[in-house]
Image (cartoon, rainbow, N blue to C red):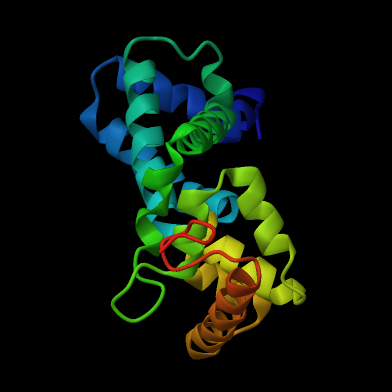
Length: 204
């Protein structure tokens, strides 16, 4: 194989050629970029976020941004396009995480409005009534490490339930049972601490 053939066969050369074609206005090259990187981005972002819906949104945003930058000639090292795609995805997830962390506490409780039948759940009430530091202390007072973990991951961190099941080796039905029992123990803890159904101490 000649030197030219080796360069043409290298991933870096293929990436650089793809960038060149996109900058020249080749729409088929844009489709090739999406097809080439979509599967790898799906795997990378799902592993990074643990949330399938969020990873799919980030994949679409990543490919959109990459295409825009390639068209404008803002990819300074075309032969490293794959690394540029990956770093763009990582930066988007970091920005997304920081944005979620800045959301008001009450907004972040929207997913825990109905922890128990037809009422606002005890965990949501406690978190709405107390600041994050106190809420963490309340969860930390639960005697079972698994109770603390599942309540925090599902209702506070809002992790994808499938990802929680996979990491804990539980089926969805088993996770629901664990959550139910953990909520019951949390309610008992709140009663012991004097936090009533409205989330305040001793109020009626």
